[in-house]
Length: 113
Length: 113
Image (cartoon, rainbow over all chains, first blue to last red; front, side, top):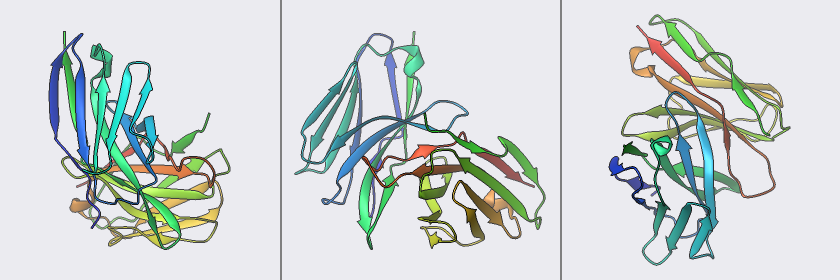
């Protein structure tokens, strides 16, 4: 089936690192994504990783992919209060010639000063 | 920059009313999507369209219909609104090329009383 799982909440202090975890089900996913949703807004693409990569770094963001365990993580270094948001992971799934995204439940990150 | 706009940020409707949610994208994208977002459930796909006048059911199409008469516009229709359709509705679009990421509008928070 199609199921992407994330923990619902994470709370960290400003300056610490945050790690948000995700497990997915479809081993044929081509791309995996991290989206950020700020209060009252739509989703913005933060970063993505191609399925043949293990790691991708983009400034304060590090994405790790463990294909064997179907586990994806997002690490935010030096977390700031502006990073408080809901973070969604998503996998791309091929269905009858069409790529669709399956989203996780979202992890609400709260950064305290 | 891709821009996806939705006709309303907030909407309050009565049970039984017919409701139209409009979405417009300016990037000539072929694919457009409607999701609903509920706490703890993440994003669930209602309908998508891969071309003008084409539509496909997503995971939760019951109680909804869609219309795509022009490439840039994708409408979600609640034929007879019910209280369990109170939710955040997000529209997204995507082109055929690239990494399959979807670009989201700001969302419409619909309350059905």
